[in-house]
Length: 331
Image 1 (cartoon, rainbow, N blue to C red):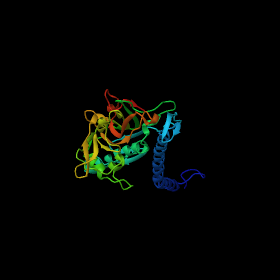
Image 2 (image 1 turned 60 degrees about the vertical axis):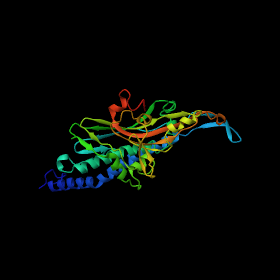
Image 3 (image 1 turned 180 degrees about the vertical axis):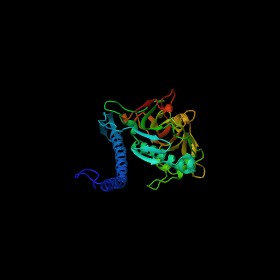
Image 4 (image 1 turned 90 degrees about the vertical axis):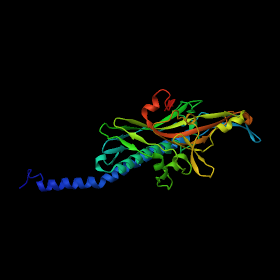
């Protein structure tokens, strides 16, 4: 006997249809996640390519033997096309790029696995940010954030920042400590065969002597930002040029990655203020020192020796905006 009228379906047929629908959803769900992840990767690469184009130094001049006379820079017509991302952490899942990933609860007796998954999430956010900016171009400081917006060159004693993502933690989240983060990043390998420290500093893995731990708390908001800080010395004062860090020096937290007396890469204290880390920092910092440029290139005379520490940071959002915070200018 039919459950519906003659044109309807039986209970058995309805149950079969529901089971088939569930089966289809189970089958296609991984493909949906793959599509979302692919779109997120495409957005990162789109941002990266816009950084490369907007960082081009467009100039013209008159060549005379080995010199370029009357050099002038033309406005760069390209603009940065980078969207800020949002991620969410609850007690059960981490949600980023519309993809949810379960995390073990503290009471599930898997605290180390929970901590590892959260460390991987933070490293993932920092990697996407660095991939877009710091790894895209050493001349990213010449880029213009918007059409007609001018240069993002920080200027003396300023730090210019680009917001890559905001991470919001729900009120039901149980506080979790992320311990010895830099040592973890130094030993965690990426698919490319290099560690996260190697990728995020542009150099080999150092011996981590100063590590860092933070605690993620319910109700917090964290920001992943790319920051530029300008250091400069006058070309007419060569005796003071040693104050500048070496080009392509790595940065881990607010320490320079340098060689010790035995030739091993270690963290060497350089000075937090020069890198943009005054009075310590809540959160994590990776990066490197980019080459500068000569501000006065006419006949190759004069000019200024410049370094740009480029760092990617995972810090509390309040650190970005409070007085004497991390960023003097935020894009």
